[in-house]
Image (cartoon, rainbow, N blue to C red; front, side, top):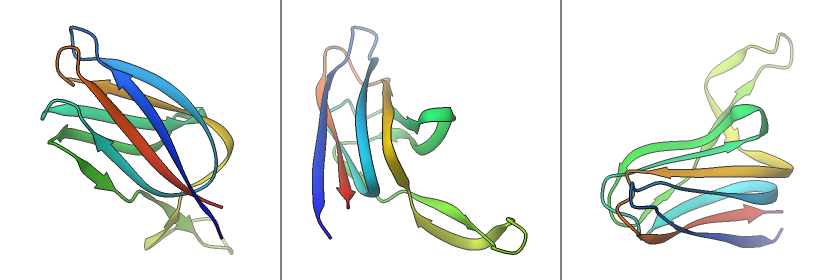
Length: 114
């Protein structure tokens, strides 16, 4: 099992917004948001608007460990309290920052597990 660190550097506009994409394959191990204003909102999505992480008011540097609900084999219903890692299959992931401060340069780092 290997771990890759994928880094996306973004610079916000005067209005505090920035966006970019990353092509990722494997399981999401963790996500670190660093360098934006203390009230930044972050949305990371996969194709089909599948949410990976949505957080508001990020202060300083934060690390998150997103998970996705798991489903039962028999009926496909979500299992209450059951969560597993997010799997990406060579997907283009979108990252959007809002309220990130004027001309702030920061990074979104996603650790991918093979």
